[in-house]
Length: 294
Image: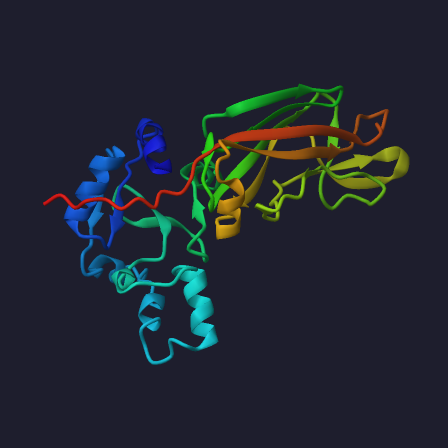
């Protein structure tokens, strides 16, 4: 349903959306009608196209092979197929992922996850590719040193979603903010996300900095002097324990703090902390079966 919520936004950007599945056409017709899907659902019964792209998941077949009892096979099943056990119907399924094609049909980008419980949201993929998303409940903060706009990539999350927390930062005129790699004497800018049993935070990739020479100390440090963006990607855990923990909840809140130190040509200010919080709607995973439509 996350794809359907973003279908109109993608169309407005001039992007098409289609999903390919190993399910039969009548199953996809039933799914589209019952879930209100408006974008194309393509049936690859027999997994011919899935095979051609090298995306077929072989693990379901291992579950019914001679080595089904091997602990390594059992671990692979729990990671790539299902923690509650596979069925023969799963044979032929693809590894879940997103392929980005250009207008000539050439794959120009791809985004895949390992555990079957994890999924990229469309908004997080767009941000990773350097695009923008519609700001969600943006918080704006002004300090003596900078202007900050913080928001989440997604209005709603479901267990297993990979999403992003976005920080658009503009140093005030004459200010520079210390970037990773600066001397330990300074507090370099970073986002601290509060620990949570249902959240997995990924390492942040920082944008390229510039070098600032401070003549009185005869030192050169990496800094940010122009507007820049920090993207903190994270997963809302998709495991059964997390699903039980969040059952009945209609939202999830992530707390954190932006820490940094800034200076101008005359004053080096004390390290600063800006407390932040992001609240997103929470939707359960959809396990309801659908009736095929001939």
